[in-house]
Amino acid sequence: MGGWTPISPGRPIPGTGQNITIGATSTQNATAFGVGTQMLQLSAITGSCHVEIGPNPTALATSMLVKNTDPPLVIRIGAGEMIAVIQDASSTGTLNVVEFTH
Image 1 (cartoon, rainbow, N blue to C red):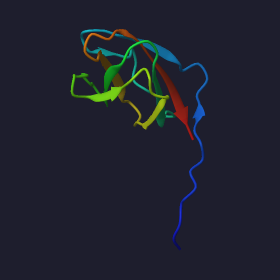
Image 2 (cartoon, rainbow, N blue to C red; image 1 turned 90 degrees about the horizontal axis):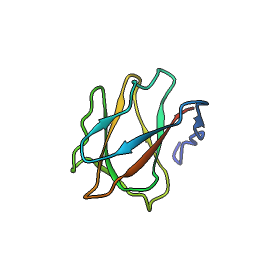
Image 3 (cartoon, helix red, strand yellow; image 1 turned 135 degrees about the vertical axis):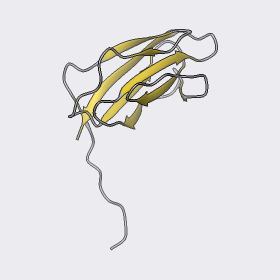
């Protein structure tokens, strides 16, 4: 049978929103994401940034770019992973992160 497999939209996990400051050095979120977290919604609020996901990530200027002019980005993650963020060029600001589940 061909065709598309329907994917149910994710649901935000209440109380999981956090802001991470975008700066000149790589900064991680405070605690690893929980078992129920399957996706993250990323929104660069006032500055563009680069992000890295993993068990102990360090964001670099070559990591995935999240622009503040783009709509929110949803990415899949695994339990126990963290996110790190660093500024793009001289851009500073805030990255908003919301945890999602199915």
